[in-house]
Amino acid sequence: MITRFEWTNARSIDDAIGQLNDKSLAKAGGVDLMDRLKEGLDAPTRLVNIRSIPDLDYVKEESGWLRLGPMVTLTTIAEHPVIRQRYKVLADAALNAATPHIRNMATVGGNLLQRPRCWYFRNEQFHCRRKGGEECFAQEGEKRYAPSFIPRQLLAH
Ligand SMILES: Cc1cc2nc3c(=O)[nH]c(=O)nc-3n(C[C@H](O)[C@H](O)[C@H](O)COP(=O)(O)OP(=O)(O)OC[C@H]3O[C@@H](n4cnc5c(N)ncnc54)[C@H](O)[C@@H]3O)c2cc1C
Image 1 (cartoon, rainbow, N blue to C red):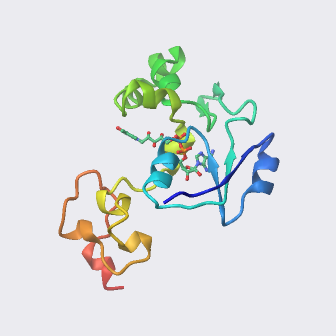
Image 2 (cartoon, rainbow, N blue to C red):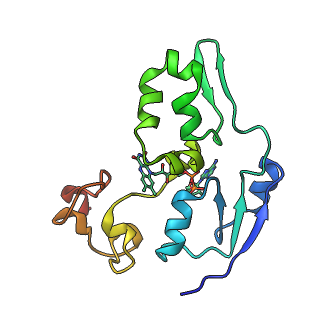
């Protein structure tokens, strides 16, 4: 199935918010989003590229807190000298995710907001609960990579 969509480059956060609606999606690195488009899980009429917004890839320490901009890549988290030295667990976690090519594109914002990695959710042939269906196939099936499957107790409610 060919899905046609418009592509826009947001100039600022306000510009991006103004362009987003229930038929459009924000695109950061695009790793998760492109998979979802290819798998037919989403069919937006517009992709709003938010990588074009300047200054969202900051890494800074403020009053003892580490602040990461949403456009910081997993590679940056893995390699940044301050994160590597002072927040080693975070750097190691980023380094262990995916592959070098994906880490170069994948942003921390997109990582937190990616849709479930469940095999049933990701397969267009399964109309699962997360896609509005009746059944959570991970309940009885293959649960690997599906940390967010819907527990049986919740299905009754
Ligand atoms: C082969 C493979 C292996 C992987 N392995 C791992 C792993 O080991 N560990 C792990 O944690 N992850 C893993 N991932 C997931 C990967 O890290 C994420 O897909 C990636 O981080 C998504 O980031 P992105 O910038 O590409 O997001 P996008 O694909 O651009 O966006 C993802 C979603 O978040 C939304 N979004 C993104 N940024 C923003 C923002 N700033 N504001 C509002 N909405 C936003 C988008 O609209 C979209 O819905 C793997 C992925 C693949 C393909």
